[in-house]
Length: 205
Image 1 (cartoon, rainbow, N blue to C red):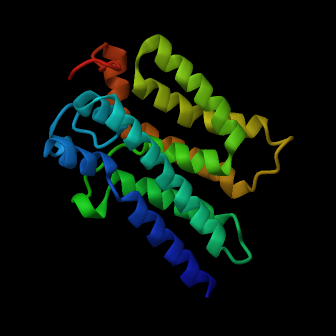
Image 2: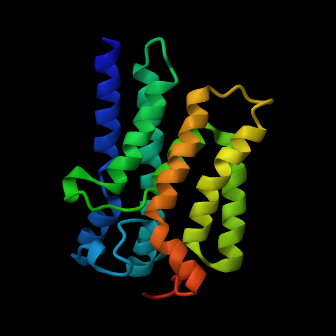
C-alpha cells in the first residue's frame, strides 16, 4: 500500500508540475506559443519579456504553487516515512514543469516550481538564499544568476542551519539534487553570463 501511495504522489506531482501556466496565459492573451517567442522558455521571466509584468507575476505565483501543492500532497498521503513522499512529489513537480507531458515535453527551467518546493520543505534556508538571489538580480539584472544563486545557496544554508533545524536527511539530499538539475538546465545561461550575452531583466531578446 505504501508503494502505491508513493507512486500516486509522484504521478500527481508530475501531472501538476506539467501544467504550463505561461503557455496557457500566452495562448489566452496573445494566442501565441510562448516557447516560440522571446527566449523560448516557458516560464515567468520569458512571460515578462513577451507579455508584461501582470501576466509574469501571475505565472510566477502559479508556478510556485505547483511546487507547494505537490509537496503538501506528499505530506497528506504519507504513511510512516514522511520524508520521501513530499520530496519525491516535489521533485516530480519540477520535472513536470521542465518536461511537461501536456506540451510535448518542452517546458521551462523549473525555478519558480523549485522555489515552491524548497520553501515548503526548508523554509529558512530557502528564504536566506532567496534574499541573496533577489539582491543579485537587483544589482546585476540577471534573473538566471539569481536563480542559480538560489538553488546553489539553499543547500549551503541548509547545512549551516542543521544545528537549529532538524531537517530529515532526505531533505538535504533534495537540495543538492535540485541544485545539480537547475545548474544543468541553466548551462547555456551560465555560458552567456560569462561571455556577456545573457539577457537582463527588462531587456528584449
